[in-house]
Length: 186
Ligand SMILES: [Zn+2]
Image (cartoon, rainbow, N blue to C red; front, side):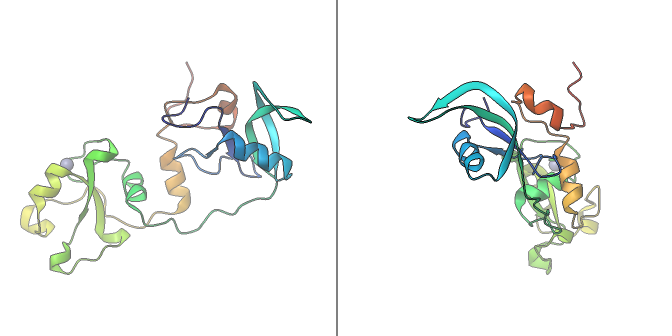
């Protein structure tokens, strides 16, 4: 079962049969999936063994559904902490170590107190230690340069990054529709 999630979620694919999102993986609660089936907004591609009953009908819960209408992906990804971490692969841009998200923060390459803006091009993922060490100094003052010059990623790039982070839980019926970097070959 997904961490803290509802049982029997449905993997949601776009009309081109690619997941709406890899990270977080696009999942709907079974109630929403069933509702969408009845509204004829999705096609059911795979099902769980489990059935739900109402007075008039019995149906198996969908495990993979595809939208009937294609949703175009946003060209510009949202500038959020999560997306900054994802762009940087959850890796501190100064010490080059990967950390769990709660241990990460974001760092202004040019500190705000020195006129730096909070924009894709000036914000990088940093661990608490490096963030503290850098303080309000410029990179050349502390010789701390980000590994990669920060820039705004495309939605496609973020989607690709997400493929490096398969979730802990994957129902076997989902695997045919997902392409992870670390493939589930075993
Ligand atoms: Zn660090």
